[in-house]
Length: 147
Image (cartoon, rainbow, N blue to C red; front, top):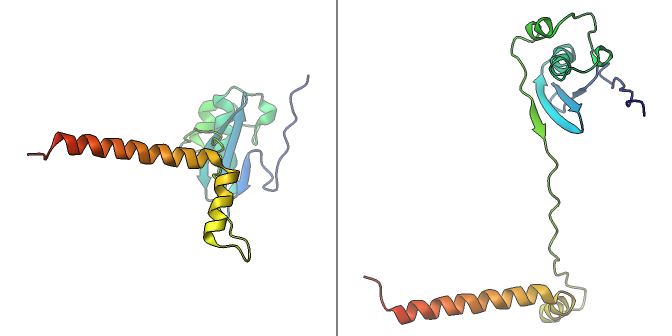
């Protein structure tokens, strides 16, 4: 299978996109991992930083924004502030806890009864929390006052 052909975005450069702030952000993908390179004041500077990442990853020259640059050393000299490659990790999806929606004409008590019927696992967890708190309080009472 042939590698996916990269395309230049609206910036005219690989890996460079404009941020809402007006600065230019650089992102780089390699071997299924995504890297944040940084933010730069111009698309040209951002493209130079992207090229440093391409050189570091030893990717083909066709992935460079400036293929006329002959070496990694030369590419890095053109980005005096350097680059910081920070891996972008996917956030784990958190499951949203159900909420209680009180329907028109429904009392709070009716809504809570409906919620308990629809989500018994939350009612059970809450009861267990109260039982544990009660048991802990009883232990403290039996132990007597602290000195």
